[in-house]
Amino acid sequence: MGRSWGLAALMLAAGVLVGVAQDGVVPSALGFAGFAGLAVLFSPLAFPRSLTAAEARRRSARDGRPIVYWRPGCTYCLRLRLRLGRRAGRAHWVDIWRDPEAAAAVRAVTGGDETVPTVVLPDGPVVNPDPAWLRARLPA
Image (cartoon, rainbow, N blue to C red; front, side):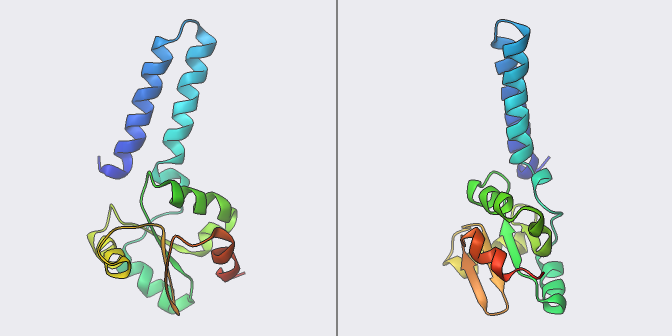
């Protein structure tokens, strides 16, 4: 299990511990459900299927769609994903924790760190863009 799923597993384990520590069935179930929901949100399940950096570049060159570099557990990535809603599938998503080439591409853009979300468009990269800005640049 990679880092992508490690955070989700940790949150799920925390949910189990919170659920067991509560007095009563309802508080236990609510505590577990809360952490299980967080585990799903911060796992790769909340994001469109992740591509490799090379595949995302090929597809973007063909269709002009932006590439979004992200990583699980990033609150800014989650904010971007949730604010894009159904339109999120109109971009190519690349998990930098699953693809070392993607992490290197982000470091090249950000001056050496792995700040995400980093969005690459044909006219250049943007680090941590406003969701409305990206939504306006997604194909219809």
